Image 1 (cartoon, rainbow, N blue to C red):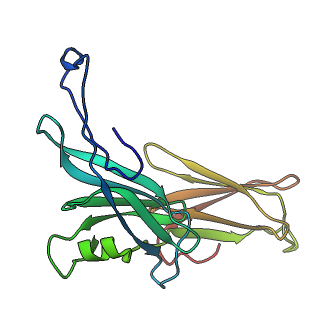
Image 2 (image 1 turned 30 degrees about the horizontal axis):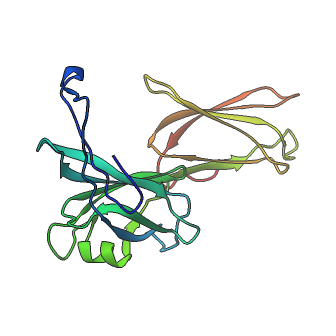
Length: 212
């Protein structure tokens, strides 16, 4: 159960037969917490998807990890949530972004906060800062026989795990491509373009990878 300005009230029944025909849920006024998300250089990151979860007890006294709120950071990297219980003690934060490695933060139990922790004081003051590490950029330029750029070439990057996944992109008018990968692994890079033979290149994707 949930409503703006109130904390979510999770309820769980062990079976369908246990669900009552009528039920009353008590909603509690929430507080606002917030902060910002940045990269290792201190630059704010917009468009980070974040979820805020807290450990609560439902109406039956069972301990649950309930999602309090979810949203995205603004252009300034700022985020806020107005759906958290006033007596916050155990909050967890999960952050994802297409170009950054996912991260999890916990509310610190003591001061000062350890790595991957944020303090209650900073959360309530709206200054809880979290950091995301960038993914690995796989970038390069596709050129022809005379080193001229090849626009519109199809670049396929496929990992070689047991559950292969692939990323596909077309080069721009200068033959350039850039993909962001969120895992260290071995990949196959295939480039196809009209009038040219396909090329195949094994690539080890890891931090520090130079342009191809």
